[in-house]
Every structure is written in structure tokens, then in C-alpha cells.
Image (cartoon, rainbow, N blue to C red; front, side):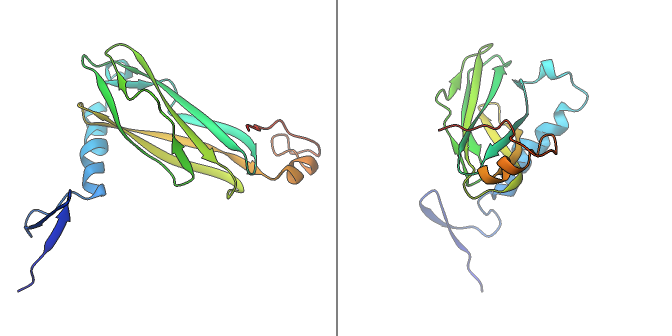
Length: 169
């Protein structure tokens, strides 16, 4: 007989009928089920409302660190906690305020290290809010080129010459 021992939250247990939740089952619970419940509803009735769900950083020079901000409003009747921000490995969560009172504004702040990137970049991030069990999908996109590439070719206009780029220290 095969015994299935598992480690969850620092404790070993044996329960083949009830394994610990996977990332996929958590995603289903927080994101897809909430998405179904939002269908046909006006966004002003949602618990969390982001000003922009897609941030396009435009063109960045390879090796720079790009900072992106996603402002949102807590439209629920309770204090919300930013429980988790699920990111690409090249991103870092710099969100300072983790709790947002009802009716107030908050902000998700992330940085993206462009050093290993080249050309188009597009990636989803997910923000999990508690206690309302809300997981919101946001998107980051942009283009990354070397400084030498940008001196020879402007990817915005398609012409030769310098492009306006984000160059943050």
C-alpha cells in the first residue's frame, strides 16, 4: 500500500483524500471564481478598482530598473490587506502600505530589472487581497533595447535616430 505523507506549514500529515491546496487550486478559488461573479457587473461595484490594469513602460534601456505603480481604490466596506503579489522573477514588490481602509486609495509598486531582457516584454502579475479573497490580474509590458541599438534606430517611429526612453538610476 502506497502511503502519501506530505509536509504543509511545517507539519507532516497523511491524508490522500485531502492534499494541501496547489497554486492552481488557489488561483481557481481567488481569481476565476471571482471573475465569474463579476460578469455583467459595473466596475464601480467591485471591491477593488485599479485605475489601470495594464502598465506599458514604453522603451527602456537594457540594464535599467523600471518602477511601475498601480494605484487602486478600496471600494469595499472593510479594511483590505495586500496579502501577496505574485511576480515575474525579474520583478520586485516595493509596496509600502499593505492595509487600505474602506474608501481610501492604495498603490502596488513594483520594479523590473531589465538587464536580462531584450525586445518585447509582457507579463501578468497577480495581487491577492484579504479578507475579501480577491485576486486581481495586472499586466506589465514594454520594450527593452541596448543603448547602442537606440542610437542607431528609433523603435517608436521606425526611423534612424535616438528614441525617448526611460533611464532610471
